[in-house]
Length: 283
Length: 259
Ligand SMILES: Nc1ncnc2c1ncn2[C@@H]1O[C@H](COP(=O)(O)OP(=O)(O)OP(=O)(O)O)[C@@H](O)[C@H]1O
Ligand SMILES: [Mg+2]
Image 1 (tube, protein in one colour):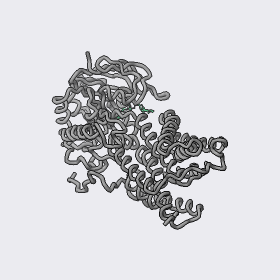
Image 2: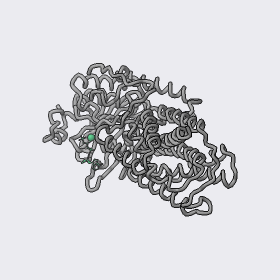
Image 3: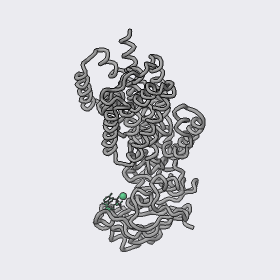
Image 4: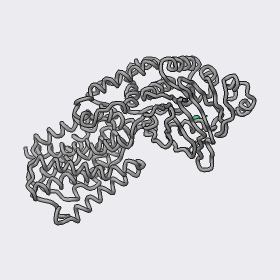
């Protein structure tokens, strides 16, 4: 039973991470290869506050999310004005810089030895509830003016600007929402494993989330959720060694590239208000 | 005061002088045409007016307000909307959403109202939906509101671009070759649509078009560009009888379009 609970918990936490990437990469088309560093920020800030200052859990969550948002603003503000390919480079650099900082500020974070003794406050119902709430939030985001504007500028930024959309502002909003979600995921992670080390949050984790989003279908929230639930839980269930995990992901990427470039679900949504009416009304 | 005043704008790309010292006036509720051979700088002029490119020199005034140096989205919000020569609709959004997106900057609900479905969100989304449906109705696309834009035939995509531009609530509408690729009956329909817009909205329209029947039928005044410079300007009759203009088109594929 413990194994089942642990698989569900880790799957829900991965789902949270994937939701952040879905907002930034899926909806807005910005590749954030440093997304996992927001998870590190969440886990370390809440962890240190919990261990060293015995801060109550809800306050530690709030502080961690606030730090995530601040970091998001710092890296987001100058980055969103850049060309898209540069954005992936800058976010990658930012992510690796965060890890370097965590590795080197030994007195506070324990450095490469990691931070241990975080209280185990993350419960099964809390992560499941968090994941559900997060899906609700992201769905509301997608089907609001924000989601529409994100999709518009992902599809054609020049045309989007010409329709009066403040592209920089919309990108920053998406980036910050993702930063908040991902740093929250980090708190859940730290307070579940009770031990974190910098290596847990490197770019490989960010890449994994991006692959999951692409596997599900970049424009489909349904796809992202289903892909996260299956791809995150399968290796845990089968207890593959970590090298095999990479191999599996590589195979998945090849399959997507060759057979379904739009991902498994493409643009399909389970609860879309208006299904695309397939009755073509003549020419 | 003129609705739109373009004062001697210029733009060069590397060595190519795409637009040189071009000026233009657009009155309130006016329809004006820009014609000229391929590569004459017509689209570049639109890109300068709508802020896609920065001006090398010159000025652009909307109802006396200087728009020079503003960003694209600010110019659009000030009241200049456009369509694109090579259709640029949003993939991943359906027909209705394409139009709603252009009206979205007028919704003021914030991110928290958005993600928790609170406050002003519901009312403003409904208002936007209704307004956008109305614009779709005007161009005759209401029955196709939930289709993918890519699945529409070319002529309807052009109409959707117009509906989307209208949703930004413009004072000036820039149409870049809106009749390109349309069949003759669609061209007639398009002319009717522009006349209706002209009648029902307080809108000044600037049209780039190679098809002379469109320009002759709709425009009060015509500017002719050639190699980035103004070659002639005048009423449709003036232009039709202008020797220089006819010569500029010689050797052009579109030569037969002129008359
Ligand atoms: N972004 C750009 N970079 C470099 N050169 C450009 C750019 N945009 C336009 N040009 C050049 O400027 C000149 C004018 O082009 P423009 O597209 O404005 O012509 P046009 O009058 O719209 O022609 P058409 O009737 O074919 O649409 C051309 O020589 C073109 O190659
Ligand atoms: Mg052109």
